[in-house]
View 1 (cartoon, rainbow, N blue to C red):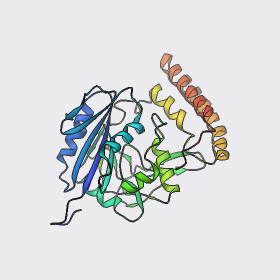
View 2: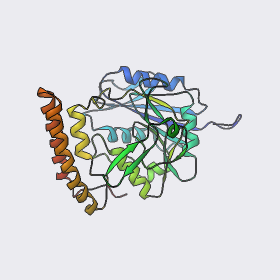
View 3: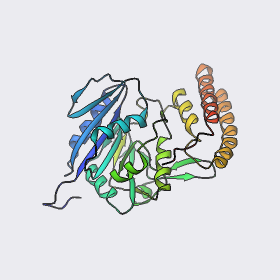
View 4: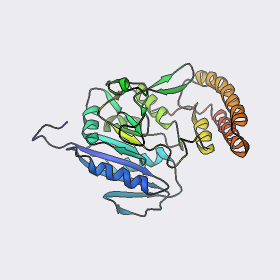
Length: 300
């Protein structure tokens, strides 16, 4: 937190909007309620261009036509913010509502030695709701990420292996060094890719318990209900963040079996068209993942 009389830190905030306006308005209202000392410049990137241009609920609007995806939207917002100087770059899904003190906690976290990204506890739907994220790690045996959800994990500051893209702070230098998100990811696993590229560059990922926020999960993409859209895009990008190619080939074999079994489960457990649509989405996404095996992660 800032000391009395100290110069105020400056924070750049990027929110990516798509779909209904209500979640984005709530996200902005929460930022206004945050009594952090940090000065803030807030940019809303409109992936679809429906909100127009200018100022909207106290934020600068950046209209993007054609919806280039989450990562590309964030990159566009950071580009509008410019070089700063910013003590932290805060990136929020539009379905995130930060708690009071979030921005000062973000500045403190990314100001630690070697920290490239920082994030805190994400609670579902309401303050005090179930924990959705309390730190994450990469399971190298399966090429998947795991998110802690215990109160003990949420209270413990530590270096972690994975930070969710739903709400985080980045150090401006770390972001510049790796070039932000890889915009070729449309949706999902761009956060895994970013975390791994930062780790390869020697940056630390910090879980900061004071960076508390509420996540109203899946307002646009249907991730909470495991919609076909979610299932396809998650499967399509699952293999890409990892290197070297030999490891991706191992994961391709492993996930081919997993995708087949998961599709069979949906066909058997979910009746009618919904089960068939989910199964088809998983297989369609996995075929896309196999088609891009040679591409691999971006080299920074």
